[in-house]
Length: 182
Image 1 (cartoon, one colour):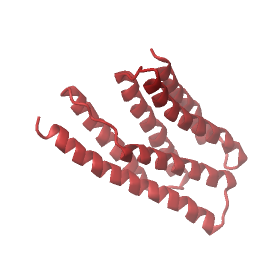
Image 2 (cartoon, helix red, strand yellow; image 1 turned 30 degrees about the horizontal axis):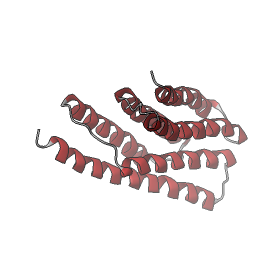
Image 3 (tube, rainbow, N blue to C red; image 1 turned 180 degrees about the horizontal axis):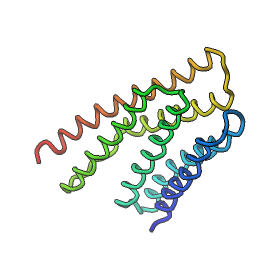
Image 4 (cartoon, rainbow, N blue to C red; image 1 turned 90 degrees about the horizontal axis):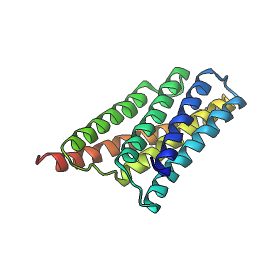
């Protein structure tokens, strides 16, 4: 197992500590702890890929695990945010369904020996989802009843949902070109 793969797996361990904190810590300043874990997880998402490329240790395990762990982190976060009543059901469905569909498309392409490459849309999708997760946690930390604070959080969440939909369209088109002939 490469160092980059260990960094990727550390994001899974961070997620496993992050979820119970989100679920059981009360609204307010204690949520700085899971926010710090989310930020650490985001840093590992940047570092693992850079490290793999720099050390020429890009692996199938790393490519698959990276995407899978991102899906766990984001999907789990959105489900918890739904339980808090801070994101709409349709937003959670957009995120979770897109992740299942793209994951399934990647698996099918891999089973056919085809490489389903990430695009800039996938990277910006994750960045916007990450920002939305941070925005929801920060809102719940402050628990600001002001309408503007909730509206600001909603804007970040809805931009993320739109970006998630756009990346799904791009992936479907790429997938059709890649697998359609096989």
